[in-house]
Amino acid sequence: MGPVVDGQEHEGWVVPLFADGAQGAGTSSARGVLIARRPDDGPSDGDQVRLIYRDGCAADGLWEDGAVICGAGFMSAHASGQVRLEVIEQVEEWRPDAEVVGWAAGCTCGWRGTPWTRVPLELADPAARRLTGTDPWADLEAADEIRVMQEWCGHIAGWKALEEVEQAAAREAAAARALDEAVCGALVAGASWADIGRVTGITGRSATERWSVRD
Image 1 (cartoon, rainbow, N blue to C red):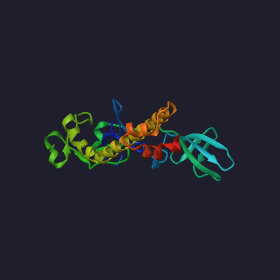
Image 2: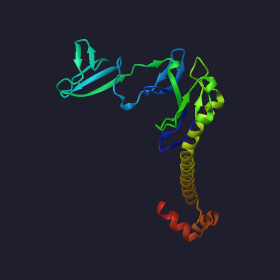
Image 3: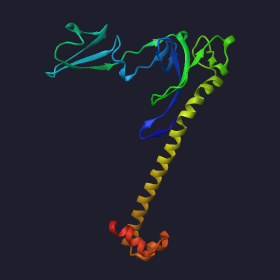
Image 4: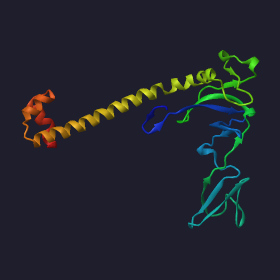
């Protein structure tokens, strides 16, 4: 589990790379490697999509070769009056492990490390960023996976430090709220400002200035 800062998770994984620029999503099976879809990729053939028009009407269908196939037949994705096109459900794309040409460290924030090249076992040279997979699969040996992910560890170092600051600030704020509530309870129970100051390490006057407006 990577750090979470400002609601942004920084989880890392080894990203399989393909010759055409496609990247693995971090899931593999007997079907091969699942390809990651980016938000700006747009629809792919086989996606379930919805065309929405200015008059509020909508038409659902299957995206195929730049057009939408629906019950009424083919509809152009640029039909007159269309406001926008939404992808309702993405079709999964799987590719064979043999097509993986390399790997890179990846992070859920979108960051990617420097690629490592996939080569046959006899050409493997970690110093030259050349690694071999566990044929016939595209998985890396544990030691090589650690090598690839070292760059991600450097990437999250700053985020991890910020996460610790964020967590410390949250603890401090929670402690301050608890102290405020305890002071109010003590005052209700009859404690004086001098008493409050003594147990909190400040003067009674300072205690009055700090908490009287919250009393």
